[in-house]
Image 1 (cartoon, one colour):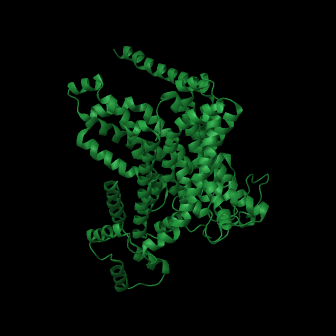
Image 2 (tube, chains in turn brown, blue):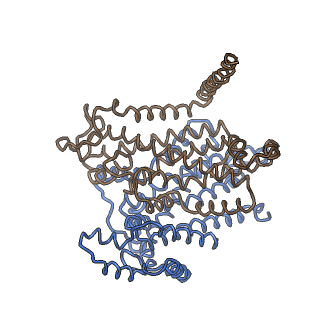
Image 3 (spheres, one colour):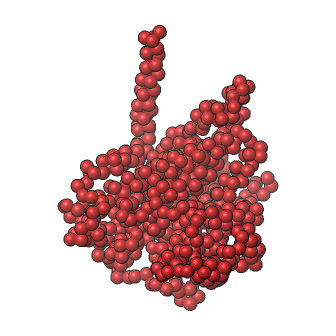
Length: 298
Length: 306
């Protein structure tokens, strides 16, 4: 018995891995632009993880002997007004940006999907109340809502993640709900209900797996926006606090003050933000085309 | 429209009061002097903070129809006055950015659609994808940098109203308008391109060509006119989001507008100011959405009769 269970267990796993590799290969071949985006994202993730190996300097140690050095062979992107290496801070800044971007997009899309599916499943009064509340949140521009949350919670990494999550939730809920509405009438959902399954099981086991396409699309679409939003909040001084390395923060204060003498302080962090958002947008657009070309994002 | 705004008002008012710590403590903490309890209590009474929360809320809500938003907790000035002196600048900036966006996006998007899959199309697409990725505050910094380094020009520190000196006003605001408008035009360009592409496949375009119309007439009178509806919707939606763009851009160009006021109010915990500004932005957002619906109905009889 035990021997027989081994192949049964391993076969689906290996075929799943195989099909995963095949799917990725097909994605690269059919959507080279999206693959370029994914490649840039991959490089950024590696740089963020191995930041200590990529750069010989410390992102926080100040050295007034090396203040405002122009880019040279030992400091590729120059140094800032505290003598810190700009390249190192950009590499470490990608940690902040990616962590906040992934965490808030994941939280926002997941919460939004849960709310959207439950709203569609229960219908009636619950749907109405949830939708009114989502409409309420949607009537704030993205950054305004994030700023309000920051003003409630204060700045800092965790609070910034929450601040970016909140405006994402209603946007995802809206899209997922419209896909889930059609699902509710499907025979398999009715069958699950006839079998006596509770709402929690039907929502989590039967409906959520079927809204994976819009969920993934929203998740990737949020990533770029979340990074942009984090940079804006940090730039305004309401996001990540000094001395932590964050791209938006590097563009604040001294970068503008010394713009004439040390333009590299203002140029490179902005390029990093643009490149990251660009890569995530490329990847997200291609993923949307591959999964659901008809879906229009709000 | 009114129920949503009321909901926004309730939400923002009570949210802002959940958090511990208030402006009075922050003010004294900032000044660094020792503050006796009586002084704190007196200040609270002056700001109306000693009243029960529901009473504060009713006072605020009743004032709104009379355009009385209360007084700023930080400066002590009436909020209506604080907003009024900044509204002109932000409104002009927003309108200029919209103008820039429309001027760039409609011709560019249509051109890209007509020349689909040529180098022109690729350039337009790169232009618009870059516009979505470049943060407007960084674009602003780069613009200022170029001017300072190459032209020795610094943005003026004070705002000149349009009717006082139109040239000075426009030269001051055109650059921030471009910085905000770039992203705006990128969104609208993408929309125009895909809308025109969709319309060009319609039967009536083939009919128009078959009856021997000029290509230009086909394009402008038949294709573009029909493609404009979603573009107008996007322009309207993004106008409401411009407020967000202004928040950062005004900071970069040191313009004393609504966006800067908002950021200051948030860092100073000026509740009354924050809640009023949030209500104002959602009003603009909802009102512009309503306006877009009206324009669409006016342009397209199919929507009117539905």
